[in-house]
Amino acid sequence: MTPIKSKSPDPNDIYTISRLNREVRRVLEDVFPAIWVQGEMSNLAKPASGHLYFTLKDNNAQVRCAMFKNRQSGLRFDPENGMQVMARANIGLYEGRGEYQLIIESLEPAGAGALQIAFEALKQKLSSEGLFAEEHKKPLPLFPETIGIITSATGAAVQDILSILKRRYPYGKVIIYPVPVQGEGAAIKIVNAIKLAEQRKECDVLVLSRGGGSLEDLWSFNEEIVARAIYDTVTPIVSGVGHEIDFTIADFVADQRAPTPSAAAELVSPDENETVAKLKQHEEQLTRYQKQTIHNLRRHVELLSVQVPHPRQRLIELMQRTDEYSMRLRYKIENELSNKKIMLSSWVNKISELNPVHQVSQQLEKVKHIHSQLEQSIKLIIDRSNNDISRLNHMLNTVSPISTLERGYAIVTDSKTNTIVTDGKNLNAGDQLRIRLSAAEIDSTIDKIHED
Image (cartoon, rainbow, N blue to C red; front, side, top):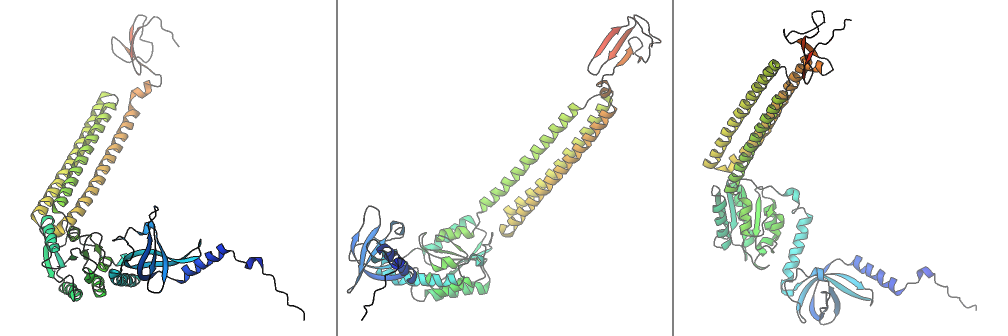
């Protein structure tokens, strides 16, 4: 028998160890999504780099783990050997040793792990359905007439909210919908309160609130029925649940999230003093602008009146017209200013005397409109005045004898008779003459007369 010769392998089919480990790592990362695992920590190492290296094990197996420094900002406990933990991790391969490992994204004690997994699962589900989308967020009313508060009637949160609303927005009415904010059955009672407020249509905005607590304490606000009730509500809802570091499903669905109950009260209430102060500031700015405009126009008219050349009679006429235009302009501007000040004063008085729920926003728009009209009116008056002055100046230059003298001509008058000399027939040697140039007058004596 002829021996079978083995076929030599293609060099491209020969794997190096590095290539093999690299491709195995890619397969592991592509096939396995991020998963939650539970086990006991051991062999914990904390090198100077700040990363964590440890082993997770159970009774029958173990796996190496790495948690890098940039993933540790959310840790709320100090990991220790022997601790039972829940870890969210990606599966990978450490190519240098050819060992598969877990890359830890988040870590927490095993006791809170179940709730956290449920929280993340519901968050991902509702997000994929679009309940967190910005296009579904409703704007908050600028001046709500009635504010509804859904919270515990005996908690500190409701007292903080009422105190802030009384200080910032005493004109607004408040309706409290008392509900339990933790424990069995709390979620359904929160949903019923939201639906009751929506059915009655008695509030312009709702505040869903409670104080801080653990994940278990806040769980009523992580229930799916609460999230869907918030999403289905037409009335804008502000969530102010827990402390600044606490996040609930209700926060993501609500139209706006406040870090604390007190911050939620500030979100739904305009500051009365601040609103009135802004109106007064706008009034002062408008008055300063108008006064500066009048000053500039007066200065401009004064400069023009000085620059108008002779003859004197035409100059007087032009100055009179300029004064007339100036007085008309001043009268018109002062009349406009007086009317606008009266209107502004009336609005400020109304704001002070009446509930500003609807009035303030309307008055702001009117002030802006009046401001725009005044600017246009002033610009039109200035443009017309400039055109009239330019036209009169051109006419004056056209008829002025000064322009003829500036071209090299002169006016000769007899010093005795003060008559203009047009020829030499009536002149004799020794007569006195006055010669008017464009910028001077010369007295001269005739020495000799040359006839043409």
